[in-house]
Image 1 (cartoon, rainbow, N blue to C red):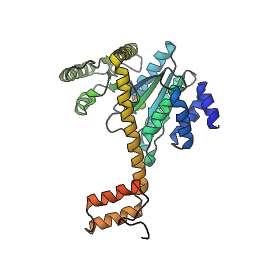
Image 2: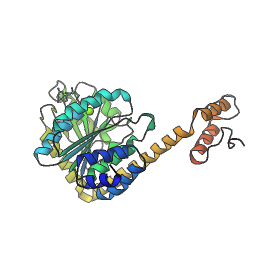
Image 3: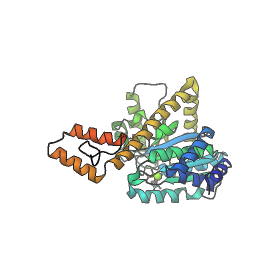
Image 4: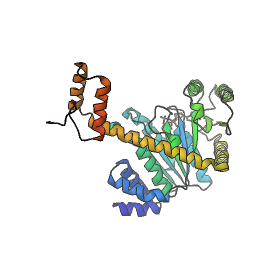
Length: 325
Ligand SMILES: Nc1nc2c(ncn2[C@@H]2O[C@H](COP(=O)(O)OP(=O)(O)OP(=O)(O)O)[C@@H](O)[C@H]2O)c(=O)[nH]1
Ligand SMILES: [Mg+2]
């Protein structure tokens, strides 16, 4: 499939073309750049929602229930599930596929797991580009699932305007959430698995913790859900709507989008620098550089300067001279 055909297919909302377009942007090559360049001007209409939380909190199950709810109300939905760098999460990805599989025959639903890029990096860029593709393809709602905040290279709050943090009882989640400063990130708090003991206690703890945060114009509501049977999903969707109504006031949505794009651009540059560092820090150069430092011929900050120089200029030997010089 040529890029032109892919773009035409995406415009018509064809799922096969959408899938191809995402594979192209995942490659981070010239084809992907052409796709994003053409589609970015056409994106910007979708409601973008981030769903984050600790592993196993029920994010995928919750998304599946939300998809069902949205389809009943006639909305089309796309889901991007971000598998963090580790190849050990394969099982989780497989799990996501199974849980989300009841939507596979529905043409109004598109689900995609972003593959691990391993040492190649670039997950933030590929994910951001995939959101652009799905938005341009005309999906009403785009949901982005990521594991946890903080240690993740994909900052969901820079890609979406509403972030839902999913917690579950009996996992020390509230203490974790407070410790990690997560209370400042989410717009909505969900206590999933509220059928389990400890849900009311977690709610009380969260509300107490929220009381400690200086009152801003928006206090994240706490919604109780049971994703497996759909309990609380309409209430969750109502809460998303309230947050959107809040953002609609006083230019907040524009400010939020601008802050998100600022973060996103910084993340993209950091990712590229990390990739360049990987290329520049080849074993031969690094071995020689390390030897110089250990032999006390070079101090560590100066060695770091040499490495940094290599990112921006033509490769030089670790001693600072061009190879062969
Ligand atoms: N009891 C109960 N179990 C649930 C509920 N929601 C999800 N689960 C179960 O919790 C487990 C994890 O659910 P997932 O949806 O895969 O969780 P996740 O947060 O997407 O997990 P990762 O993507 O691996 O981080 C599964 O076995 C679900 O069936 C719920 O409301 N109640
Ligand atoms: Mg999941």
